[in-house]
Length: 227
Image 1: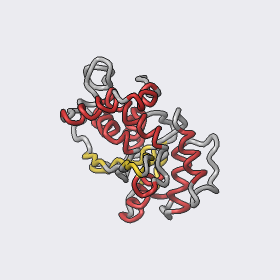
Image 2 (image 1 turned 60 degrees about the vertical axis):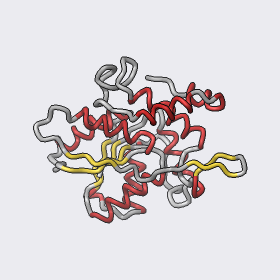
Image 3 (image 1 turned 120 degrees about the vertical axis):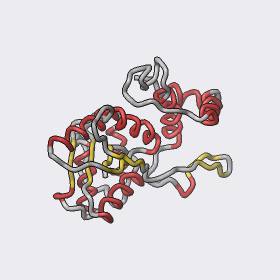
Image 4 (image 1 turned 180 degrees about the vertical axis):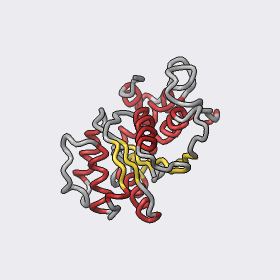
């Protein structure tokens, strides 16, 4: 199981639960990046994990503490990659770590923030592009959040414990499609070549355009610039 550093507690729990139940290695990838503060805050807000030290620590170290202290995954099954600062490095440094340590990885499960899961899978595909026998990477975001409107208020079904604030969730969603599209401005082969080609069903693009043109969401979109 590969867990890419993120701040979504249900996703983190899902990765630990899976690795513990299957008694398989858990590789955790994450250094200190521009979104690491969100993980610190999520841990502070969680009633189980709030005692853990977070400030200044790489994401992988914080997540390894969660995996070991709370999910009882032994250190012998934890692999920590603590240098990556973005999605591309998560994939590249995961490959380097697996190969340098001689760890078998014919097949594995990749778990990431659900809003970034599709891009992460495309990045892993790009990093192993051209390999003689590339691994089979299976996608599992750990949770599938659903927004609902109650009494005029937008929120997550089930309460949304451990998830993003709704405004950040929308900003992340709105910012992903321009990155995923295979255009000169995107991350695909015809753009920055960070990820493999991603094909979009027309209804997904239509839904994104509808959200993009919503005046109430304009600020969220502006908060996500391509970089």
